Image 1 (tube, rainbow, N blue to C red):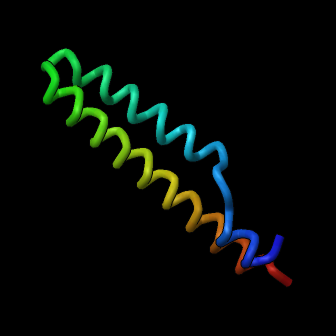
Image 2 (image 1 turned 60 degrees about the horizontal axis):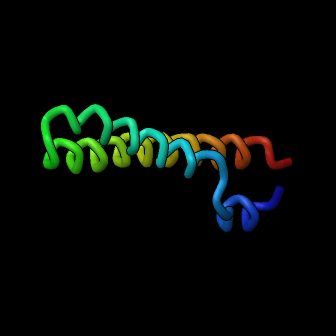
Length: 68
């Protein structure tokens, strides 16, 4: 895998995980009403996006260290 392939990824499983966490956050927040649902979706999407970003960075750093 080249760096270009690593940077230009299409949708992968991490995107579906982010969507799933956002939906779970929305379900949890819906017990507080419509604003809770929206807040839950935003919080869940934020948490999932941070996880995906950190795991992509880790993958990139691992690739750079073991390139040769």
